Amino acid sequence: MEIEKRKLSGREKDEESIRLLAKLRDQLYSSNASNRRQSAFNLSWMQEDGLEILKAALFSDCHITTKNAATYGLRNMRGRMKKMAMEVLQQGLQIHDRDTKAVCRNALSRLEGKPERKPASKGTAKKTSKYEIRDVPNRGRTQRTIGMMQTHRRRPVGNRRPPRS
Image 1 (tube, rainbow, N blue to C red):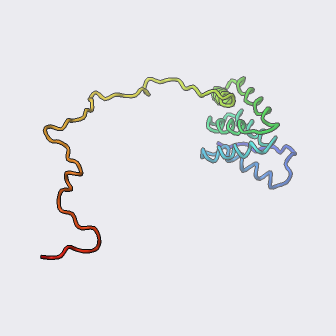
Image 2 (image 1 turned 30 degrees about the vertical axis):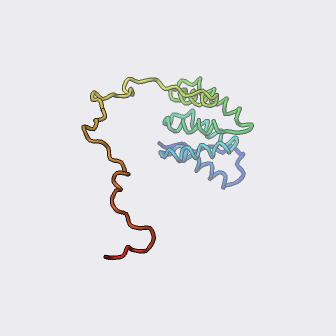
Image 3 (image 1 turned 135 degrees about the horizontal axis):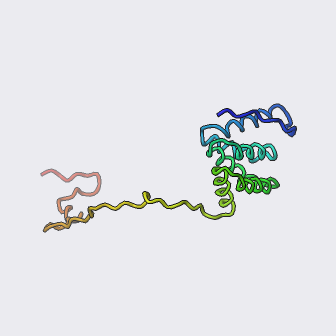
């Protein structure tokens, strides 16, 4: 999927920060899950620029994995950006896109500390075997102990050998 160029906001200080934001944005849309997540985390430290890129990814028509990474970045926003990130996630609940609603609902429930609920499916029940595994009892033989095996003559302690006869 080809993503369109980002318009500069004017907050970027120099050419290097522009290149860094472009690189992080490209990684956010990549096919590698680890790169997406790391990029979203790095964008969460970028204040307004990071919020803008994460918000654009969340509300775009990209794959749900990119939206999940974007909500991960929004959940990790700190300081004064935390409130703005919460507002973005609340806006995501009003969007008609099913995937956006689902990831925003999940992100908000994680922020509130509620455990994630997954619908139970019929195929995930633990299967039991029709055969019962039982212990086979010993028949007539007693277990030998280590003490019974050591009745033979032992070598004397030390380096000396017994004299030959």
